[in-house]
Image 1 (tube, helix red, strand yellow):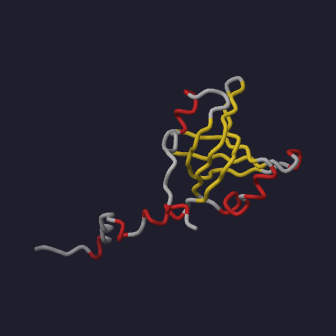
Image 2 (tube, rainbow, N blue to C red):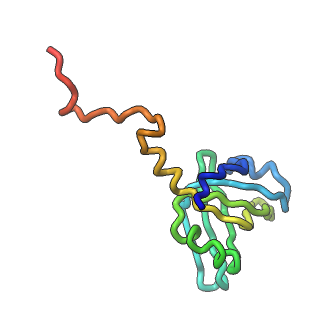
Image 3 (cartoon, rainbow, N blue to C red):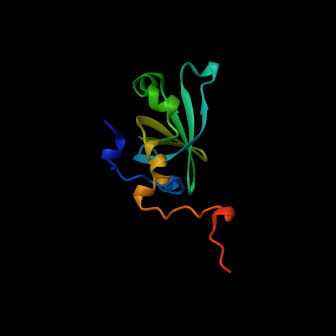
Length: 129
């Protein structure tokens, strides 16, 4: 089942995470810019997502990784729902659900979605004269 069929729930921009309380349940979406699985982390995966307002650090525990393995490994654009963990000046999202919504990126290039056609290269631009 495609995650595009259900675009809800609302996604909070990264810049607004600091306005939420420790333990708040939120949903974010962003491009995956970093995946880390340190050998010393006992199977924990660290993801960094980026949206137009900033970055979100996501912690994926081993059991959740096994459940959402494909999205974590292959996703270019993810929607993550989880609980905020705010300690000192650092905020992390402890993942509870991970959805691969990468197919939304492909739709950006689809002219059938209503985007204006690309400008032809200069060599193909009609000459007037």
